[in-house]
Amino acid sequence: MSGALLEVKDFSVVFRQSGRETLAVDRISFDVKKGETVAVVGESGSGKSVTGLSVLRLLPASASHPSGEILFQGRDLLKLTEQEMRGVRGNDITMVFQEPMTSLNPLHTIGQQILEMLEVHRGMRGEAAKKRVIELLTEVGIPTPEERLGSYPHQLSGGQRQRVMIALALANEPDLFIADEPTTALDVTVQAQILKLLKELQGRLGMAMLFITHDLNIVRKIADRVCVMKQGKIVEQGPVEEIFKNPQHPYTKALLAAEPKVQPAPPQPDAPTMISTDDLKIWYPIKRGLFKKTVGHIKAVDGVTLKVRRGETLGVVGESGSGKTTLGLALLRLISSDGPIVFLGKPIQSLKFKAMRLFRRDMQIVFQDPYGSLSPRMSITDIVSEGLRVHQPKMSPEERDQRAAAALKDVGIDPATRHRYPHEFSGGQRQRIAVARAMVLEPSFVVLDEPTSALDMLVQSQIVDLLRDLQKKRGLTYLFISHDLRVVAALASHVVVMKDGKIVEQGPAEKLFKSPESSYTRALFAAAFSLETA
Image (cartoon, rainbow, N blue to C red):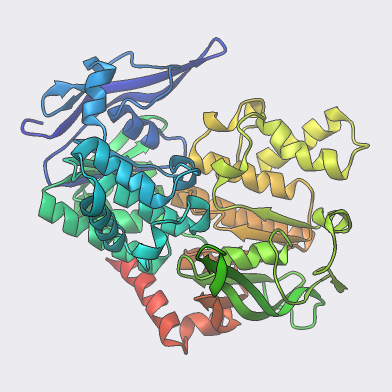
């Protein structure tokens, strides 16, 4: 390990809560040399993110380290004072977190947040700082960066927020860049751009990367070496090419073999229409000047016409910011829109809040960011059973708790953990809890907004199988929003491709995947294919 920039030696992490001790990381050792990329892969809850957070000493007070040391440029980070660590964070080591919405300040514009980083660490101010912010936003692929300086995090798509986080992390050209699922929220074309960008920056700056991910296709694309984690231990590590060609540990073999089965729900041409819309529009006014005069519109969804038949899965794919999530929210009447929306044969576009409540049990959603959609003040059983309290008020507390436990078991969460809180679960586990919350009401129509984006491949396959089984048993209808074309191919019977708020192509999934007609669709599929075969 001599000559390494970062050395993790015999390192352990224990969390203590309510008198219980949980061993999250168990005597792991690895190193990262200057200019190289080391990937850490494993299932949800394996200790990947805890390892990354430990390097920057960002774990909560409930964490302790019964063994080991973390050496950065020869200094043990575990022995530094908090003031000394502040000098390391942001300058020498930076990190992009898994959930950008919780990492960005909702009260400050993205321009202010990057300017603050440059001012605190580099003393940059005025026009020079503004110019550097625009350069950073351009580098990470934010369109019209000058106009986006005044945007708040909630005004950006999930993928755009992730790109802003990468710009923040790279602002001070660190020696070590820790990336915790940095491409989770990104579509395949932007994934390819970001991975290329990181490699270019790494070559220019001599920057090392600790890359935490569940996506083996990305590991193959970007990493030099890989550490495979399971239940807090590193079960196998070595050069990427060697691990992929000749894995030794059974878990590594299972991880490499995991792939969602392509068994989409068959098309139902004679089934009744579950939900439909015609020429749906969601335009946001752009206002300028003293009197806030409307000078134009952001056309988030621009004239979309579609219908989903009962028992089918409609896949919606496209780049970040193409309008996929906005479309899903509009169909559920969670945001305002123009154009008719018909659900189960009944127009719902003009219904007020109270009238819409009658439909809420039948139409549910799993959001892209589970941490942002799960209340940190509620236990998991309370979160999952909240809908039952609203829609089935006569159900007893005991029965609600039993239903919540059964729903958690269905999605692979141990019901014995249901009295814990969201922060005690990994990102992938929180995503499964979000699925359980939607399914506990036994809806007929579910919008799935990137429900597998935070999950490793093994759990992805399990969740896809679960969604497929639930669809068969209950006759569910899905609107499946995703940038992961493998998962869309596994579930969707019909696919819609969106770009700039419009549908550029749609049709039966089998036909579309085999012979896309639009040049944009072909480019989207080509990017996904290049990631998988790199």
